[in-house]
Image (tube, rainbow, N blue to C red):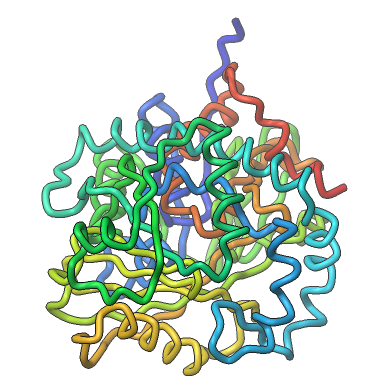
Amino acid sequence: MRNYKCKSVGIIGSGIQGVCTGLQLIKKGIPVTIFDRHDPLSSEFIAASYGNAGHFSPYAVLQFNRPDVIYDLPKMLLSSNGPLALKWNYIPKMFNWFLHYFKHCNQKSMMHTAKYMHQILSLSNDAYGEIFQEIDTKGLVEKKGIIYVWTNKNLKSRNLEIKVRKELGIEQKLLTQQEVLDLEPNLQPVFDAGVIYESAMHARDPHGILKKIFKLFLNGGGKFIQSNVKNLKQININETAIRTEKEEYKFEKTVIASGAFSKSLTDQLGENIPLDTERGYHVHFKDKDHLISRPVIFLDRGFGMTPMNKGLRAVGTVELGGLKNPPSKKRIDYVIRCAKELLPELDHHEDEWLGFRPTLPDFLPILGPSLKNKNIIYAFGHQHLGWTLGAITGKIISGIVLEEKTNLDLAPYSSKRFY
């Protein structure tokens, strides 16, 4: 067995992927420095690791590269009252992404994605469990399951989801409308049935959890530099260089964990990876978190609600529009309207937020070395599941950095698949 120890690692990105990776490396005695323009400990930190739905979703193996979704795309895009929206000025920039997406939107690719999402999702809760043993999660994490509800309008899609999860051995409990209402009596019965994933957890304060993990990293000897990374390169086989706005830093290896912002760096490295952005929104209804006991997702609407310490967080929609377009008031209004459809007693809202999900057209993350720069490791593209996969990504990437053996098949997560 090879006895290899990396001399130093730089990590670009202080979201849940970067922080968990840094923590795992520090535990193995490797000097680590994390770079980000935002400080995770700041109250002004509003990245995806702050604004997400807060779900730990080990069951979420099926993504949008499904044949049934293709048929609904035109209807969803043309509807102002649907879960999918497109910033039309951004279409030319997504041309490469769409080419890959249509190539991967079929039965075979759907099952490939489901299989390899399941491989890492099935380990995700245990990976967090190891970290949670070291921090106080009281008032931050609850394990009450997550409920999905739907109407009878798209039963073919619902039956497909149930079938695939059953084949993969994922625990799921189907519910009638009344059984859903028995669990969540404040919901309006505008749905016909549902399912509960009882093994799922949710965060009552995602940012609070991130801060505690980040402090664990710092207390273990990790370093943080708050600065915007402008350039990245591999100098030789044993050295990489990270240049910020002020200075250049050298490490043996570098990890890119910048979520939707990773593409500017991979483009610099000469790798045209089809990473793009799903824009998601949230609002809070203050003091209304008591209305439901656990997250509830309405599949027909593409939106969900999570009880959090800050209030009831309503989240959702997929908007394709890149990083620079302004927030869409129509998308915020849609989320509010959906929330009030399920819980009519909701009144005024606050904290309108737009976040960016890093999405690849086959809906698998990229976990592994750059093809052209072996000392630069990729850890991005987790789409809706960045929060769920943070801890297990940290374990996987730390193993890749240290060239450890693994029983996991990591080939499907390589960027090689797009060449």
